[in-house]
Length: 416
Image (cartoon, helix red, strand yellow):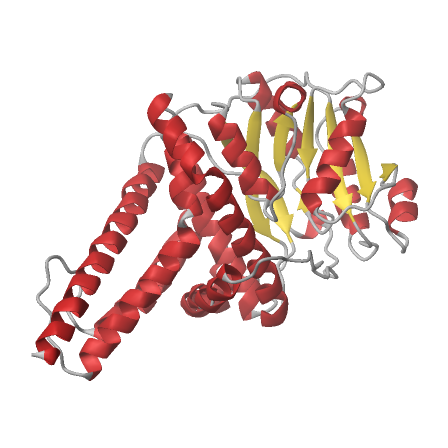
């Protein structure tokens, strides 16, 4: 009798988890399919018109900032229509001197700034004063390198009517380690199946932390008031709530430096998970209500996006129940199932699915397979390690911003 009761409880729990996961997967499969549809809102080429302030929040980045500024100095855009600003966040190294020597301007932070979001707000507050006259802002991390056409394409984007835009996030060190390679594939997949798909759907893409543009009037109207650890997706949520669409500009490319070690990756992804959970708590209900009341689909889309850490833990719970049933030879009555009770089949199919998706996206995006080859076989493990990260983050009440070291020195001419 007790065994039958346990079996019944496990069955209810299993089927609930199974249906929830299937619905979640189907949502992203259906939206992801739109990446193959004819592209709407194609951003055409226009004459140079808008003036940009390029903003680089930096704290002790003397190892890499010169290559970023040099790539920005090589932009195929009139020099008179953009200025480079480094927001020097309490730097104690040569970051400021290097920036000035390469023609950039420095905004020295005179406050106790703890996060990148606070540094950006500080910079916007300075540049939005009547003293300056810019039409839009482009934001980069100090370790980035920027494609020569970036500003030109963001000018085209503004001319096309978009006020906020995300560029294509690529990697400058995809072949260094299995970690950097896995990151590279993660961004390729996000670019291809998330941002490009939403651009095709005439929905809103998401901000990916760096290589994005926002017009001055958006900052004047709504401000840049982020309080979570993930200022990028929080700002994207604020845009959704205000009905501001975010364009995805595939040929405005930023090459980002990826972490090399699992320790550095753990630290970075822990910050991402905490920030996403913070956004879930702060914006989920607002996004759902606004999506219903104002019929803004990107609000619903962002709300679903913020549930990712919880869904990953639910998926892990599903796997645990499946494993228990498999070990104890318990056959559960299934309402709906993709894999039955076969835990080994789940593992095998999941692993090979990530390999096939990775190879497909590399080929579809016309990238060199050898550069991201390590990640093809390690991406599944990379994604799996998010489970302990999320478990840790759910019990974390306070997080101190920990910087990620950047040392990879590559010139833009060696990447394009």
